[in-house]
Length: 575
Image (tube, rainbow, N blue to C red; front, side, top):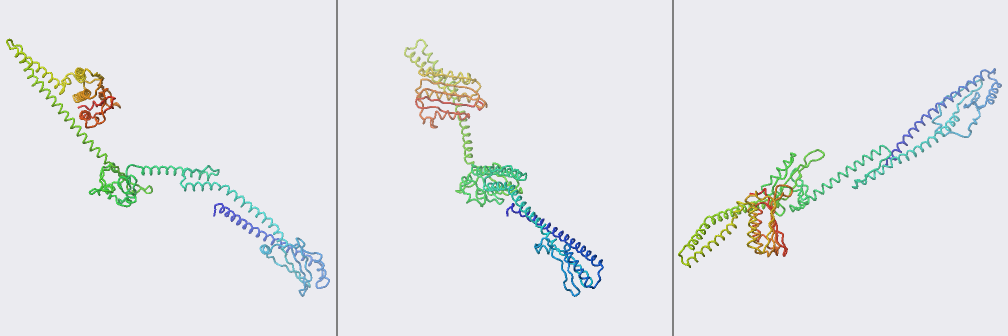
């Protein structure tokens, strides 16, 4: 039953009850009015007849007296609403007053007459020789009351119909926005949370519209947030799962499927200890106890088992799952990230660091041995060669010596000089003494000058910018060895005409410290790709030297386009 019909039915019932109450009041008033009228008529008629009969000078018991009464009554006719009947001494009806001509032939309905007909006493007057009976007749008064009531009935019926029609129309018009509200609720039920209601004229409906729009907006925001969170969970690269308070898995996202190999159907409802390797089962219980106490487990590195039995390293985090209604902890939200590759990378980095330190130590020992060897050559062998040269010169200059002896002595002097020059070349290659006394700039300039002398067909260009006198022995010897190796390769393999050596000290990118940039480039035939590989020992040695100082080493080369080595060394990392 619709609200509109219910309101109309309620108004109809109230109006009917009101009309019924009014009808009861009207009927009761009509009955009282008719009774009062009948009683008044009876009294008037009785008094009139009593006055006439007993005031007249009639002789009782004579025929003339009865005839006089009869003639009086006939001349009197009908007295208002009273029926007058005259009976003789033996009860024979002698006279009856004529019927009323007022609204003759019409009568009120019997049910109405029974409702309003009053109980009025019949008046009996005894006279000489007969009886006079006065009976009240309320039919005409009842008919008048019925006629008046009919107007009221038609008026009430018209008012009843008009009110019902008006109320039905007004309620329908007022409740018409309910259809829009119901349509909006229906759309919201179907998932369309973007629906909005207009502002209605009625304050109550306008308030409903405002509340509905706020609710729809809140639901739309909530659903958008839920969809975003669900999308994050399903598309997350981390394995996300939910454990209940017994440690059983109740949620399993796609990343967890990829990481462990179990589908959601296979793992849901099973204990999380299924993923724990032997000896780590208590970790899950301990983590759950921590979470139940509303604490967090953050980035704990541990291990878990996959479906195929592989042992993987994971970073585990857990947080309590709280019921929003009662604020109770109902489970645990757990996320795991595969850190196997990271652990391997960390292990590789540790090994690389160890190798770097070992390489640096080896390089340091090699340089130390070269220094010692250069010192021994200079101090020991140099003295012997000088002594041989001095003795040979003494023999060659001695007078009286045979010509062949002087010639042999001079040969010894020349050979000793060559040995001395060769030994100094070896000493400079083993350990350039200029680094210890003159610095990197002078050493590079002297070295390039020597290369120009040995290879006049090559054009050497040295470009140095920035201060290089405080770099330290490790960087100095590294730069010198790289330049030495590069120029040796150019002279042997490049078939180049020009070679440029650029050394530049500048601020590092981002302004964090300073770096030393070294570039050795030629315009030769270039180097095949296989020469860039780790198997090329000259390049491998240079790369290891640079990496030992946490620097970067790169090669830019192509066939017939020259060859270029670029090195960047952090100055703050010098040893």
